[in-house]
Amino acid sequence: MAYRKEFQVEPGAKVKLDKIDASYTGKHETHEKAKGELAANVERLSKAQYLLYADAGQSLLVVLQGLDAAGKDGVIGHLFSGLNPQGVKVARFNQPTHEEASRDFLWRVHAKAPAGGEIMIFNRSHYEDVLVARVHKLVPKHVWSRRYDLINSFEKLLTRNGTRILKFCLHISPEAQLARFKERLDDPVRQWKISESDYSERELWGKYLRAYEDALSLTSTDYAPWFVIPSNHKWFRNLAISEIVADSLEAMKLKLPPARVDIDDIRRKYHEAEEKQAAG
Image 1 (cartoon, rainbow, N blue to C red):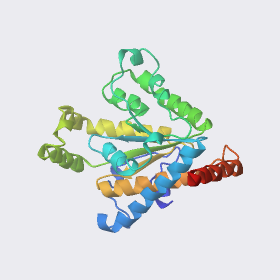
Image 2: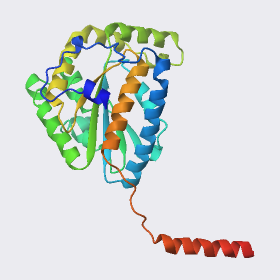
Image 3: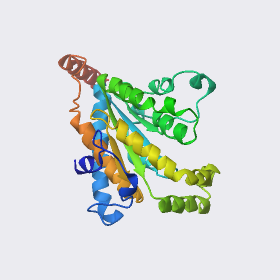
Image 4: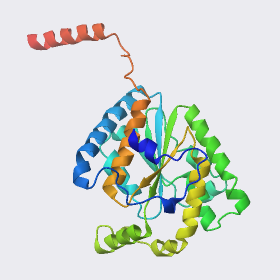
C-alpha cells in the first residue's frame, strides 16, 4: 500500500499543490518498466470487483477531480473499462438543471450514490460546488464556505451505509496541460474536446489552486480520504490510482456469498437431466 500512504492527504493537513511535483514517478523511470505492475493491478481490480458485485453488501465510490486535461477520462478508460459493466457506473456533474439548482447542492449527487455491489465513478463531482462555484463567484462566500462541512457529513452518511469512498485529485502542471491541449489540436479524433474555456480557465489557475487546496485540506477524512496523484505522466497516474483502488477493495475483505439453493439437490437434478439426455 505504498502509494496510498505516499499520496494520501492526512486529515487536517495543509495542502500546497505547488510544492508537489506533478512529474513524480517514484521508483519507476519509464512506462515500460511499470507495465507489468499496472497489468497486475488491473487484474486485482477485476477479481475484487467480482467479489464486490457478488457480495452486494458494500459499494465503492471513486471521485475524480482535476483541472482541464488532467486525465479523468483517461483514468476511467484505462482502469475500469475491463470490469463487469453490470457493476460499474459513471456519473458526470455538469451545470445544474433548473430543477437541480432549485434544491440543495447535494440533492442530485445523492441520487447517484452507488448501490450495494456497485462501483460508481464521479467524473467531476459535488466538489465543483466548492471549486467552480467559488472561483467564478456563482454563489457568495458565506454559501460555498459552509459546504465543506455539509460535504463531510454527506460522505460520512454514505460510509455508514457501506460505501467506501476514495477521492483523487489529478495534479498536473500548467506546462503539461498546455501540451495536452496541443495534442487535442493536432489529433482530429480528440478535437471535439476543445472548448474556448480551455484557455480562459487557465487565466484562473492560481485561484483554482487555492480552491483545490482548501477543499483537500478541509474534506480529507479517515472515512473519505483525498489522494493527490502526480499526473503529468499518464502511465504513472494510472499505476498509482490502480494500486490504491485495488488495495482498498481488498481491504474490504469481500467474500462470495453462500449458495442460495441446496447444491446437493441441484447436483442430483443435473445428473438426472444428464441421464435423460444421454438416453435420448
